[in-house]
Image 1: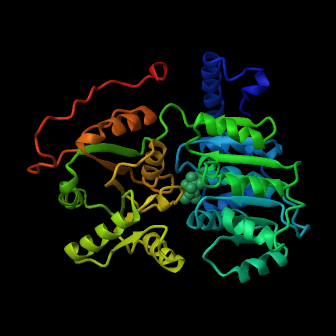
Image 2 (image 1 turned 90 degrees about the horizontal axis):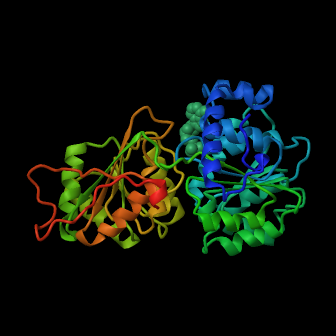
Image 3 (image 1 turned 180 degrees about the vertical axis):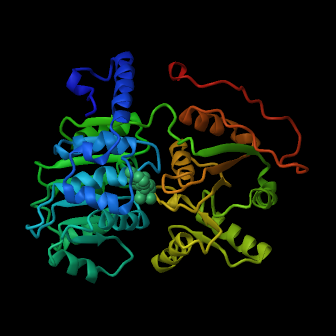
Length: 427
Ligand code: AMP
């Protein structure tokens, strides 16, 4: 059983002690090597064996025993390390199958991610008689209403549709026991926060609140505490928020040579499946149109928030099925999506926020894949500062990616890069 910092009476101000105790937590967490040690029920253990999960991931080993107690908790761990099962397994254990009322509400920032969590949850609860409802926009509301009136005990969805169903009084949260915010930092940022606050106001105050994310900037963590009661913090993100199964590079490039560079990189890397991230929807569409023509391939698609849901579904389905080799995308698929075939992430446009970098590259090198992933970030000469911010965030200096016989940028002056290891103390 992991040691909890607050149980030891240690406050966050004692950074030195915190580090030592976090180390102890790591050591003890590693000592937990089976799901049976976590306090899960026999039917759940049988399901886990059937699914083929051999041992709990570190976030599962640390988070599940705490979550099972019903306490509020915040879990932070690197992308693709099994966070969904870390909150879903204990949450599902705490539901009463005989009560046909909504007891669990899980919210995620995108429809695609909600659907993925929904699918994973059904897999994890296959032996139980629990009923689920998926509450996402862009889908017929009729089926969602039917599922709710049919006595769904667990609801998974996006905030907009959840509010819609609450307003129409098809969703009632009076008997709610647990609320989970997946990708919690995104859910609490300014875009979603008013919706989340409204939804939380409709939930009983006596409830368990769980927050999970790979990234949790300190102001968001502080804000999160407003909605929770003495939450336990399980932080396994360590100094390096990106998993070791992703090889990361940067390459300096002039804006007008990015397309030529992308062609070179694709020819050199021969990705099984790649996601190319752009900053804007228009940028994604333009790149998609050009590359479909140039590569004469129908295995390329684009995805962004302006596409109709039907099209978004088709694209994700084709990507999961391995039919697409290249997906040109905005950050709409930057978070959470778990597809084992994605071998490469190309940041055609450097992300605006460093945390978005962490989420984008986390779409490759996942637990569900046997292979390492590669992430290559295109950086213009003017974006040196943005690259440095990312390197500080991931506590890693990225090596330069080389393409032979190709001048990616015109040699005016080379960007000055100071190579140093970012230590926690210097930040
Ligand atoms: P997540 O980070 O929750 O998106 O999970 C990433 C992938 O790891 C998913 O495909 C899960 O099905 C898989 N996974 C989760 N937990 C385990 C485990 N303990 N052992 C093996 N695979 C797992």
